[in-house]
Image 1 (cartoon, rainbow, N blue to C red):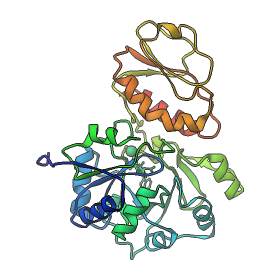
Image 2 (image 1 turned 90 degrees about the horizontal axis):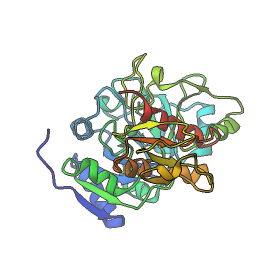
Image 3 (image 1 turned 45 degrees about the vertical axis):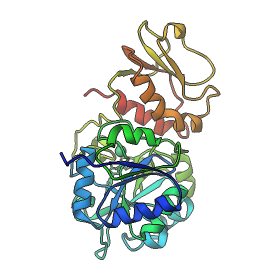
Image 4 (image 1 turned 60 degrees about the vertical axis):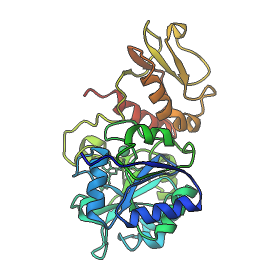
Length: 329
Ligand code: TXA
Ligand code: MG
């Protein structure tokens, strides 16, 4: 482990963005909000900084990172775009879409960040604080979610602090992140394929592409914190408490993660109840997902019973994260 750092928490403003840029330039680590979740940023060209980032997260070093850039023009310095990829970028950037693309030879992103692959994941975030940090720094920033590897992704500065205080230099507090689940990852290395459902829905992507999108599940694509190797089940986004999905009733001793207006059988027995969206809105549910999981995980229930969540729209990403949180480990 690295010697303990003093982690400063700063309110999001232009001074904080300037400080972030100074820290990044010096090889330090800065957590900042994006529209999806908080990211832990490092200078994408600085190998030692990226090594420290992996160590701070406790993440397996062979798992590649997303390069965040301020606009499409900056992205084109890193990766090759064809006509179809340009269509996706123009339709969804800035926003919660990550594209996995062929890496250009002139791309300055450190090998450690791309795990030695000849592809690179790129995204242009649309959160004003993330944009301020990228503009102030002026170069690509790699940023995985700002949690310890395997933990629930952070949607508030307090979540980052709980996981990473003493391990990083600065946390910029910009309040709760609006989308609440990570970016959608689409591989554009031939036929576009969905690697991770996320903040941009499959339906929206398919409308822009004008065809259906194959889903390469994480067991083979590893669109999350698992190595790029076949046969690995992604137990991830993992609370300590076991999850029971598609719960239509509540057992004594359980806590309940609800969805929609109608409580399940036995809901009064629950030790604690949180509802992702009492009105059954999937956008609201995505925004609440990780913070509700954290609170219920700390509530001392035997199990977190989770009501069924519809699969449409953002429901695909929500169900994906819940399935990982419930995976055996
Ligand atoms: O919303 C998000 O995408 C957030 C915010 C901070 O931008 N970031 C995020 O990063 O979720 P991370 O590192 O937690 O997840 C990115 C995933 C990695 O698990 C990795 O497997 C995948 O993207 N990835 C990165 N580069 C890849 C590549 N070249 N090929 C396939 N997958 C890749
Ligand atoms: Mg992550």
